[in-house]
Image 1 (spheres, protein in one colour):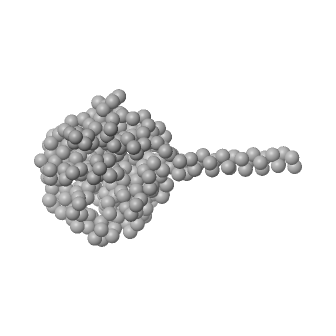
Image 2 (cartoon, protein in one colour; image 1 turned 90 degrees about the horizontal axis):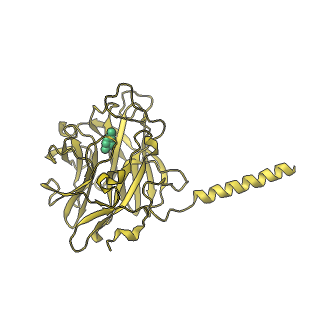
Image 3 (tube, helix red, strand yellow; image 1 turned 30 degrees about the vertical axis):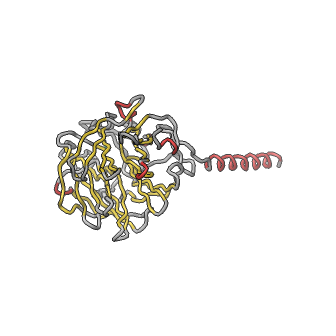
Length: 345
Ligand code: DGJ
């Protein structure tokens, strides 16, 4: 009886302790550290993008679980985990994220599906179409050997999904691997994608419903092998943060600017500063969040890939600061920071 009572007390205390720790709020960004969601689980949304809709931020990313393997036939370091789907998290403050579940789920019973676990789904990005009132997701749809080089498109009536997968294609009959979406102020959307064997970037204008390219596209950064594009706008100019092309390994980031979205684009150089800035702090760009674009307040989001244990990959979110006098943009390394650091001192 006494033993039972003690066990009951211990169990109540343990439950209370778990609840308290699960509810602990994040108050600072801590790049490279495990970032917990509101339930206390590590956030699992890699190669992702953020969509702001009606006062809430949504974070979509690759949901990586299970073992990382290098296939026996691999001729390069195409480390992979099975496709499980695209996760969705929601937040009001960008620090505390609630897991909303898988917005796009794997399709384990159809080996032909792009969403079969044996395939590769990367770099999901979601945008809202005000005309059709649909949420539109584009992903990099791949075969396990990365030979497919296509874009996959899915739609949903709600930000959390479930998204309905429409299918994949090569935009303007061209290869498409690392990719992002950008909606301009006039509602026109564009897909930026690493094309031509990752050597040249294509900027594809999309149809009004955002479901396919409308046929107008340009080749930019020709032969410069840019990957991981992240596009944002500041004071009427377009900016693209991107990485070089070295598999899962880090390299130097680069910022470019253009007066018109289709270019010409001018390379500004590496915006990262501080320790390991020449290796993007060991990260790779994925998105730039316009927290307050008018005031020049942006967050640069990078992935810290762990190629031999992809499920333990982390995030490096840092302020992208704009010098008010010169307009120069920089991304300084900070081991911990908060929203006040978005302003350049
Ligand atoms: C670099 C890309 O940016 C990633 O999304 C992924 O495709 C890896 N290459 C695979 O090596």
